[in-house]
Image: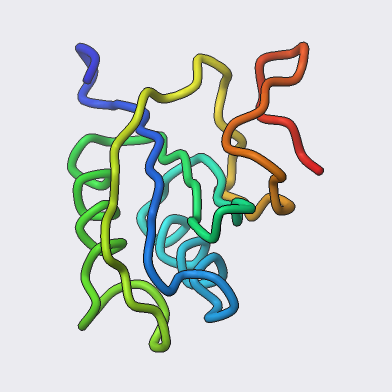
Length: 116
């Protein structure tokens, strides 16, 4: 967290989170919370997301991602939400869905994750 009450986190979400509209619901929830960032599927069947915004809203978003009863998509079953080191690059605004990745967080020359 920085001095103005904002932070950026990168999360890896595992479980039944692909082919169940998890990314679609994540975009809808994140935009509703006013967050910047992105979400995409990974080749290892996890979903990767970067959330950027107010600490309070990001904490709410992370809790939503792991809530099998009231979060995610109706057909998802989240087993784990891992917080990992966030990227240094700026997050896109508004929150967006990115194309699938062949491997987690491949870097492009401009510091943004590689899109396949």
